[in-house]
Amino acid sequence: MDNPVLVDVLRGAVVESRHRGAVAVADAGAALVFALGDVERPVFPRSAVKALQALPLLESGAADRFGLSEAELALACSSHSGEDLHAATAAAMLAKAGREPVCLECGIQHPMGAAAARALAWHHQTPSALHNNCSGKHAGFICAATAMDVDVAGYVTVDHPVQREVRAALEAMTGAPHGDALRGTDGCSIPTYAVPLKSLALAFARLGTGVGLPPLRAAALARLRKAVAGHPFMLAGTGRFDTRITEIFRERVFLKTGAEGVYCGSLPELGLGFAVKCDDGATRAAEVVTAALIARFLPLTEPDTAALKPFVTPLLTNWNGIAVGALAPAAALAS
Image (cartoon, rainbow, N blue to C red; front, top):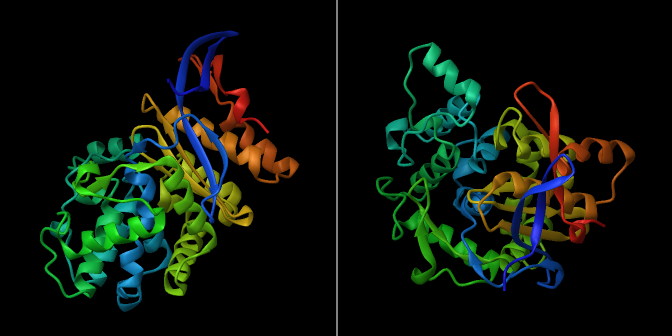
């Protein structure tokens, strides 16, 4: 059976395209409170689980040993745009651990942010691994490896002690197996594991509440949430959905994008976590679904509603700036 349509793309009043997918919303006791589509099928969360992958950074003692700031902890959870402050912050994290950017094994990437990419070209500079959208996460892995007193080289491989700790944290948080048959390789070269949406929603309910977690882990996650809420720019970058939503809601919403149409997040005051997967991998649709979920579940003031509306039904404009259509969430997502 096909997953349901989650988002319509309208040109004028006519549906031009449709995005199908699945959605799971769960509480920290693993009860599904809302679901659309196949929430049992394992999907790769990709970068949506970076906050969970950052747990060894705190639990190893590395964050405190090296005096990482809140902005640096936020960057460890990010898929950033490669703007100057992002790259400089990743370099600062490495320097605090006595490491150099050459240690990064995430690969060289042009900045995701168009303005940042143009600025590099304008100044005749070449991109580096610091501009990779995952450099903050990788700097965190390197800090953790240093604190664990293990070889930093090869920290992206499945059998490296850091990745074993990451895998254990993901299994514990999701309650789902992360076996070899479910393993792929992410864009930044670390292992990624396919997990059912309902298990990802559970993990993010736990992330937002700490319910059912050891005190050390609950405190680590609370610290990461606070860091991201205090530094939304570090989570993504100028004009990006993750940054803009976090600027509006701060600690009331924790969310994170993943490649191929994935979003995961928490609504801590409600004790809920959510996970979204768009079948065609469209980020634009996953953002609309995420905004619609926030509008459906989170109690909103009139200013909140007004601020969120452009994300729930974003306009489509042509090259002359004329509004020609919009994206609209399916009625099943509305409250």
